[in-house]
Length: 157
Image (cartoon, rainbow, N blue to C red):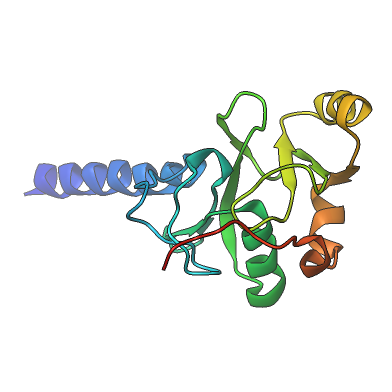
């Protein structure tokens, strides 16, 4: 009986530790099936998508970095992790450590014109060649995000 209790506790610890580490990984987004939790548009361009992993473990998905910023500003969610795509590699990177460029010439689904970069140096290199404003995460969260928004891409409903 004592061994069953120990085995049950070990399994429970392993299960719970597995749950807590899942926040460090982005959720899989199903292209053309999942929708943005801010604007409700379908997520068509995966390389523009962003996401939050809430404290509950639930992923909150966005079709544009600007939608995620607007959601954070209005909803003030408690989250364990946030991910954006690096503009150059198209790989998921941590929102917390990213640097950003806002430029009206950067195409994004909702036309916020925000690109994420894995380092400040890469953002500054991009800025030298293409212009725009370099922003850190803190700057982006304080910005009037709606003022970044262009006319938007044509989406069919």
